[in-house]
Picture 1 (cartoon, helix red, strand yellow):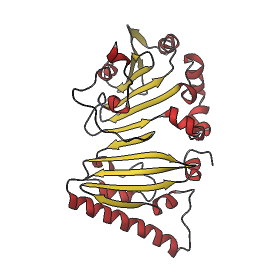
Picture 2: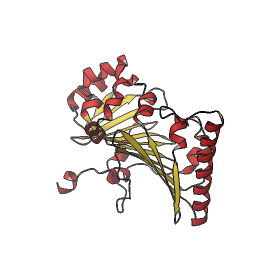
Picture 3: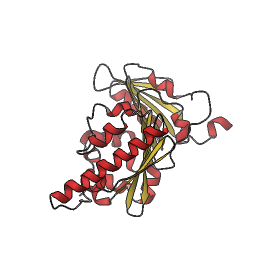
Picture 4: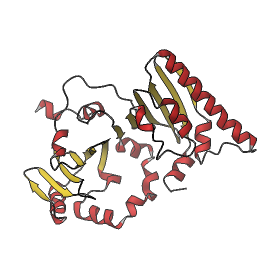
Length: 280
């Protein structure tokens, strides 16, 4: 009873997630809600999607008000989630069965978007749901037990992501102008990017763990030089960094090396967030 009653912290969630070539994302929806940033999602397409509205109606669950936190792991074999919030389990099970799914004891399984994706979910606790979308019908069960060992160190931030630098090598799905930054750190063993509210804006804080102190110093120098080039290109075109697009964010970055780590910071104005989320 003591073990099950402990808070499922971000570090405890991370111990349940798959390792390897995986991107992990943590979002504290409750804190973003308190700070007023969650309201920026009000105009996002997901909330207006007819299928999502049916889901909300049938399950009595709306992430805007019922989801407190979530950790997602995007792994080579599929996607894994641990979500904490207020769940009407009876309605959720009924919805799964209405979508041609089936439930055995606490585990439910539903067809995903393709034959290689089967969605499985179950309650880890009354307020925590484990979800997996993989070829394995029972993948969600892997999230019910943590790996042995102490909790890992994680950022103290409402939103953060962690991944190996190798995931940046393709350069796909990166904002315009960010590929030059990505190439500098793509050999790093691990990269963490945390987003912290500061007044009416966010601060994006970078932590790159390099192989050696020299490689950290080299990376910090290269990141600083790329940032200087971004500012120089804008000045050449007689432009000022625009806080509503990526140029304003990238041009404001600062970097330093400490030991085998590179630390960076980008202020992210509210205007950029609104544009990024379609609320501008």
